[in-house]
Length: 347
Image (cartoon, rainbow, N blue to C red; front, side, top):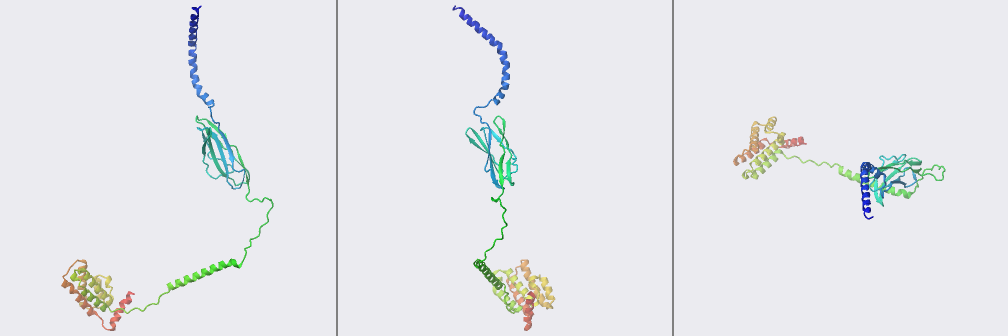
């Protein structure tokens, strides 16, 4: 009895090994098919704790006046790893979308809520419906679930409708109450405005009133002005101080101003040659023209050619200019008349 038991057990073990070896090829053939259908089984099999997408639509008011804004909120609840594809553009039907909608997402217990707020308005009367919005929820595996929000109906009423339903009579013109006390502030304002205008007019007229012409002072004779200027030039002692050029410039100006006042020659604006031509046209003595030429040429050499004559030569020019003035001076009433002619020409 004890010898047969181990033998029977060993025989059964061999039979089991043989059966396992016999079905091993069949198992190996089934494994590729099982691996191929595994993704489909996983996609079909619901995940533990998955959130089924749902959509809900709310409206701020079921009744509104024409043109008043109405807020419609679409709320979609889905899994945290899913996203919502909102329709773009949004078909609002008879309504107009006032502001561009901005989607928002908020985490809630066990999932996520995505919200889309629409501010719409209509300008028609009656019950108007916002068309259903088709949106898509895409999960992490790429699966797409399509949801529809359903239509939203809003009753649009007229603005200022008569609750009684009767036709109103035409209102007459409004009467403006007239009282003397009402006009007093206006009268006072007009009086103040008139007084201000009169004051401004008088002040402006006083400023713009032309002044009475003052009698012109009789011009001084040209030779008197020239002799005084020569005296002042000689007393200044410019050559001794080394101001050679300044001395000759002032001497030339004194002589030119005298020639302009005495002969009517615009010597201050002329070259030396033009001044001499002007003097020759006035029948001036040739000796005087020669002296004027000598004086102006010497002054031009100092001014433009940088000539620096000796001090005695500088002092000898002033007496020569004095002699030109003395020789050409007109004595008596003719002197005043001659002095008045250039003054009239300059004015």
